[in-house]
Amino acid sequence: MSYVKTTILLAGLAALLIFSGAALGGRSGAIIGLVFAGVMNFGTYWFSDKIVLKMYRAKQVTEEDQPDLYATVRVLAENAELPMPKVYMMDKDTPNAFATGRNPSHSAVAVTSGLMKLLSREELGGVIGHELSHIKNRDILISTVAATVAGAISYMAQMAMWASLFSGGRNNREGGGGHPAVLIVMMIVGPLAAMIIQMAISRSREYAADKGGADITGHPLYLAKALEKLEYYNKKIPMPKVNDATAHMFIVSPLSGKGGMRKLFSTHPPMAERIKRLKAMAEA
Image 1 (tube, one colour):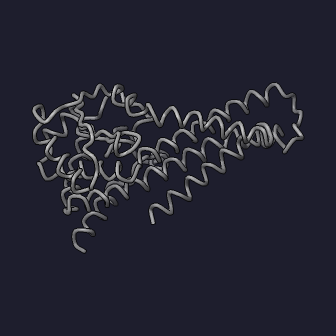
Image 2 (cartoon, one colour):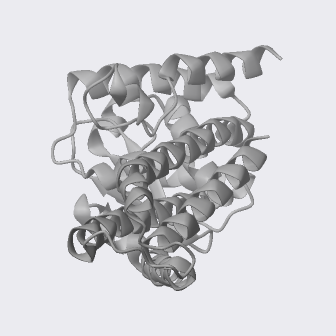
Image 3 (cartoon, helix red, strand yellow):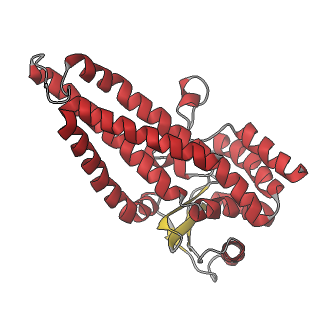
């Protein structure tokens, strides 16, 4: 069901991109929008893993450096029938983790030093299983595409703003592009709708990764217990210098603030609901 929902949401993003391009420049604008997003996707597909690992100063470790972490990743990767991903550590007190890479053959799992100190080996397995599920389902690619298309729509909204300022109210009759009312709608509604859809995709993939991770370990409560600890300590010890564009990658949102509009734009589902679903899996 989550795959169907993700497909529908991605289709909605693509339609919004085409509409934005058409609003800005008619049929040619729609084509430009698709090409623009395609170029951006190519770049992020090949280089996003290196960028985010460098951003958080993650260092690759070997089995000799971190025997428990490395062994956990290796065993669970075998359970998931995945190639062994590279393993990275981030020297941060905040307990958290993420996976990255363009496909299962070029993937990496990164955890913080705080996570290693906080979790038991079973709970660590629950977290690693979640991240391996992201890799197996190619969620990194899906989230990258969603973020890129949403970003392209935002750029077009800025272009629409400048177009409305310098068009003098003239209407581009080719496909209706450039009409002042359409441009105004695009400037306001387009980026907002794109952001909401992007966040919905991210939340959908988190639920799927929780389930997939529980299947990989065979113990849903391992991840449920880990999430309870991670939620508490991420509020108590917030991670400094977090890039909003990468928040969706972490198993627990590293961004502070809750309630109100923040919930609407959250990249992660409510923690209570995630834990509830995992406990239901354990009882089934």
